[in-house]
Length: 293
Image (tube, rainbow, N blue to C red; front, side):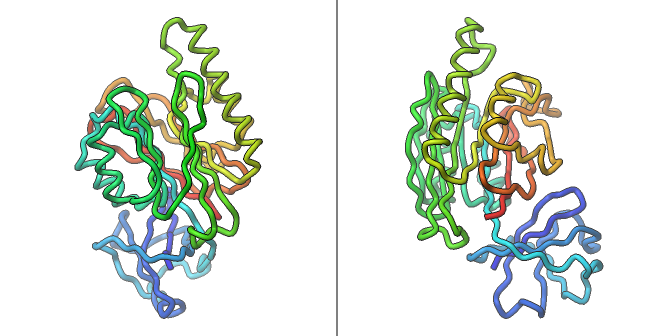
C-alpha cells in the first residue's frame, strides 16, 4: 500500500505501507521538514509499494494532528512535460521522474536521449522520439494500449488503462497526451484555425470513447485564451479545481515561469492536487496531477 500525504502547500508525497503497518506505524516521506507534519494529513491507498530511500519514519503516536487520520482512497499520478527537443538535461529528468514517482508520463517534444531516460523508468506504453517538435510519448507503470489521435498538423495520443492490468482501477481510464499548435506560428489565422480544429477533434474522440479520462499536455494556451475555454468544456481544469495553479512556461530557461500553458482536464474523475517540477534545460515545468480512481 502506498501512503500519500498532502502537506500545507498541497504538495503530495508518497511512501510505502505494508498491510502489517496499518494501525501500527506510519512511514512518511516528508520533503518539507523533519520537525513533523503540521496540517492536512491524508493517507491514500495504492496496490503496489514504493518508497524514497530517505523516507522519514514516524509512529502514529507522534503525528501531531490525529483528527485528520486517515482518508483512504486509490490514487493515480500522471506527469506531463515538454522536453524541448532533447534539450532537457537527461540526469535532471531522470531524478525528477524518480522523485515524483508517477504512474504515467506524457511527453512532448521528446528526442531519442530523453526517450531513453523515460523508457528506463516506466517500461510500458509507447514512445516516438523525433528531432523536431513532434516527438511524443506515453510511458506507463503497467501495460496500456496507446493509439494516435490523428490531430490536424500535430501529434496527439491516447492510452487506455484497464482494470485487469492496473490494480487500483475499478473502471477503464483514458489518458490523452496533447501538444497543440503554437499560436505564434505564422500565419496566425491558420494557426488559430488549426488549434481550434485540434480541440474539436479531441472533444469528438473523448465523446466517442465514452470513458473516464484525463486530457493533459502542452496546450500552448493560458487561461485567458479562447482555446483554453474550449478545452475546459471538455473537462474541468485540475489545477483550477484544486486551487493549485502554477505557471509552467517562460521564454527563458532560468527564472520564474511567466504563463500557465500546460494543463490537465478531467472527464469523469476527481483531481486531488497538482504540482510542478523543474527540469534543467527545458522551458517548461513538469505538470504533476494526482487523481482519485
